[in-house]
Amino acid sequence: MINKPYKLLKMKKPLLFYLLTALMLLAACKKEQPVVPASAGEPLVLHLLHFVDSVPLQQHALMYENVAGNPYSVSKLNYLISEITLEYEDGSSRYLRGPWYIDPFDALPDTIQLPQNNDAGYPLQLSFHLGLDSALNQSGLWDVQEEIMLMAWPEIMGGGYHFLKFEGQFLTGNSQLSGFAFHLGKSRHLVRHLPVTPSPAGSDSRYELRMQLNRWFGPPVIWDLNQQLTHTMHNDSAMQMLAQNGQYVFNH
Image 1: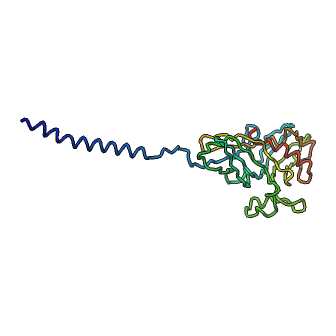
Image 2: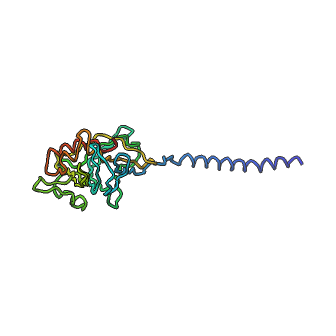
């Protein structure tokens, strides 16, 4: 009778030892697993959207009115974005050369993939060019991309590429339909857009940049289609005024 408790205690000690050892190994395994934020490594995608005031852009819809009171529609909108500089939360910056061709009326999404979200955090601000500077605006340089090849600027007018083709119709003062074509090219008319803050859009990896088409009509230059040129391609002064307005067309 005296030996029974001793035998029982003897049996319990190994069981307790193995249990404690297993718990320690389990804890050690957990400590070795890295803690990775859900968004680390996700590509950031910039979506370019197109609005007239608060109304999403529709093709051939005579439903818009600019700051000068001209009713108008849009039949074509093509443009080039280049040389994006991103300022991140940690104070660092990233440069992306491009160019990117944008057409809201084609079947492809108007998106630009930004550097991955890692140690830099999220983009707080971005600046960019609408068009190409003199180093990039060389005839034939981007012809491997068919869409950009179709943006070619006539050689007789200096060559290079169109930065913008914004075309449509408007109602004249006599209620007649007439056409307008805002074409922008030549490196001296490059639009250096003012820095903007991209808007998060429902997730850490999706950002939006909105073009407000009415800003092409001003300010700072108020463009009345009944009073000013409706076709800008052959007029440097008109293109320079258009480029001034172009600094404010996104997210303003």
